[in-house]
Structure formats: structure tokens, C-alpha cells
Image 1 (spheres, rainbow, N blue to C red):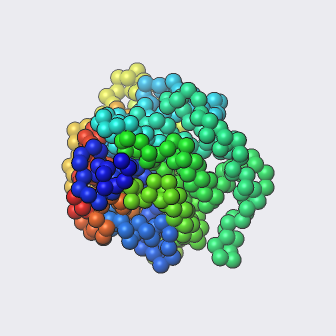
Image 2 (image 1 turned 135 degrees about the horizontal axis):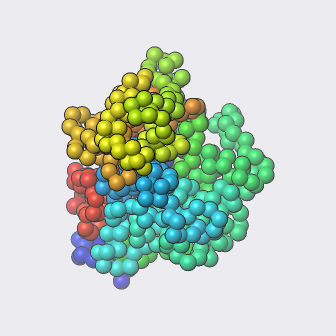
Image 3 (image 1 turned 90 degrees about the horizontal axis):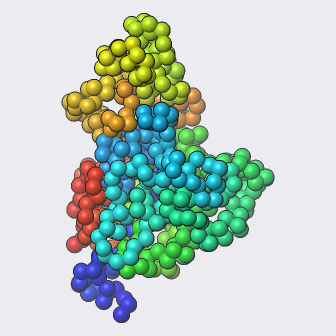
Length: 512
Ligand SMILES: [Zn+2]
């Protein structure tokens, strides 16, 4: 018999009468959504965010406990509870010592992109740990589906875990949602049909306005320029929400014997935030529109399966720093550092000590330096000694707070404060750089706009909100970590702890 009274609460255990059954975990990530966006714009939220703030358990002091605070690393953490030291996802990209090339966190030479076979393929094969979706599947508590959706490949793939049924992301060349042969042989018919309707084209020439102020006018021709602009506007989130509704409908999410997982990551806030900064009218309006967009998604879920059966988590993959010029104008620190100075300092110091040579292997991001081991070995130079020389050179540059060497990281650095703790949690020796460089607060390697990645709280503090069956609404002020989301879900759902979980169960917000 159907109905909440006869169903189980979570899994198959008998449930007290009247308790709603969790049918779906809806894990919402908003890319680059700072915690203070909840408080600064509170009076303007009337939709989905307002609902989360009033009906959810809101953690007011929740942080990422790792650095770099970047997209892939955050998305790998949210549903696994694991930071890079255990997840192995050490950045958006890094130097792969075996392939001898730079790889993205999800690059998979063995896979193919479904829907855009010419694009570099992606999969979760570099993720070393289980996610909540994997644990639900392995628990044997009935058929369960896990789907990841995002504009970005890494935003869709990493939360869906290794056993995810599918991950879909947006290809800004074709304007289509694509996937990977890691999951399936071909795109499902509903995805082909969604793409075939070219739903993005309704935004051709559209105007993004905040009140009477025009913030952006979309190009009028459907090409890569148009689709890239869509990614940096609220229209991309709207399209993603539409695709999410189609996924719920066609994958029958929330209608299986076991608990389904739908991980959706709204990426457009990040593109806008990088270009305009957290103090811009653009970032502000993105938040207000995210509130309305989530109201639409919740209303759809309410009609389909009932929101009382949906366990919602809401967080971000990282925060963002203020634009340096905005910050210095208000007497706060702020600096733009040049990453080539780091590369030059390392090359110069090693050349002075050991003779001329190309001492770094990578062409870009020298602030995450990978030394040329072939050259070190050919000249019989101990790598540890070279790292010390390089570290000393980088330490002398302006704007640098700390430099750790790989040898220090492996031996174990002293966890003297939260910066050291986040550096420690963010390092995985098999994939990490030879030096871990920490800038001074508010200093960044970005030529324009702003960025994130530092251990400081402006990049690390994000919303953590849970709402739904088993969760007590309220404001919770005890320090929490994004890592705590996955173990709390595992506890609520009565499944095993994800293998690399570093967090704690947020038991203060559990109703039973
Ligand atoms: Zn991000």
C-alpha cells in the first residue's frame, strides 16, 4: 500500500506512523555562493532560499577544511565527506606524472563524450573514494538511481560518485547537454529530445536586467559566443533547472524502491562572480534569481513526489575573494600577483644553483609548481634539496605568506592553525605539487575580476543547509564543515559511511 504511514522512514526499517519516507536526496550546489550571500540579501529572498532558511537546519559557521578551494575539489567533497588528502581530487587540474601532461580532475582518455565525441572525455575515474550515492547502491536497499547535473563536467561528475547512473553537463560549442561512455553507451532518448528542441535558443537576444538596470544583453546568434555568455548569466541556470525537471520526470527520480540521489550544481553564479566580483549588482541579482529558480524546482518536486519526501542539502563548492581594487578602495588589503614571477623565481634559483635548465615541467599555473624530475635525475640532484632552494626563492616574493615543500607535507606539517590544517587536508602526495604556496589574505593570481582557491574564510565559508525528513529546522552555530554533509546523509539513510569521510554527523539537527 502506498502512503507515508505504511512506508518506511529510511530504507526498509519499520517506521513510526506519520513519518515521511525519504525518496530522494536532492543535493544542490551553487557554484561560488558565499555564506554571506544568505545574510546580505536575506530580505529579498521569498522563494527556494527563503524556504531553506526557514524550514531547514542552517549551519552558520560551515567551512571547507581544505585548500585549494576550487570547483573540482569542492564537488568531490560534498557527497563523499573527503578532502583531497583522501579523495585524490587535488585541484581542477594538475600535472599527471605518469601521463607527463596536465590533466583535469575528470579527464579520462579511455572514455568518449556522448553527444560531442570530439570533446575531451570525462569520468570520475580519478576519484579515490565512495560517495553517498555509491553507498546507497552498495547497501542493497532496493533499486536506486544517482544522477549528476551541472553546466560544468566536474560539477556533474564528481558528486555522482563512481557508480552514478549518469552525469550530464553543458557543451558550450553545441549548446547541448552531453555525458560520458563511463555511464552508458548512448544518450537516453529524453536527453536527445531535450537537446533537439534547442531550448537555449529562447535566450537569443535576451536582456538580463536588475530592475531597470541592464546587466547583460545576450548575442543574437546561437554560437559558442552565445552559449558562453549564457553560462555567465542567469539564463544558464534557468536552462539547467529545465533540464533537471526533465531528468526527474524521465528518470522517475524519487519513484524507486531505494533512495535516489540527484546532485545538481548551478555553475552560472561562478562565471558571473569571477567577472564581476561578490560586491557587484550582477552577483547580487544572481542570488535573488537563484532563490526564484529554486522555488520553481521545489514546486515541481512537490507536484511529482512531494517535498516532504525530499531530503535537500544546499551548499557551495567554494566562496570567492573580493575584487582587489574594490577591497583596497575600502582600506582593506588586496593584491594581484603575477604567477609568472613564481615560475621565474624558481627557474632562476635552480639555474643559479645547478646550472641553466628548464626546471618546471608545466607551462601554466607555476604557483602550483611541478619540478622537472627527469632533469633533476639526469644531473643527480636530490629532489628534496631542489625543493628547498625553490621554496626559499618563492618565500622571498611579495604577497607570499607560506611555502611548504612536498617533503614537509609527506613528513606531516605541524597543524598550528586553520591554514596549516587546510593545507594538510588539501594535499595528496601522488598528485600534489612540489611546493604548496599560500598567498597573503586577499592576494590572488588573477589578472582581472576575482578568484578563489585560498584557505582563508572568504573562500572557505559556504552555506550548509539540510531540509527534509529527519531534519530539525533551526540555526546551528557550532563550527561545521562541508565534509559533514555526507556522513549526516549516511546516518539519516542508514547506510555505510562513505570510505574517505573526514566529517562528523551533524547530530544536533537530527530529529530521530
Ligand atoms: Zn566553482
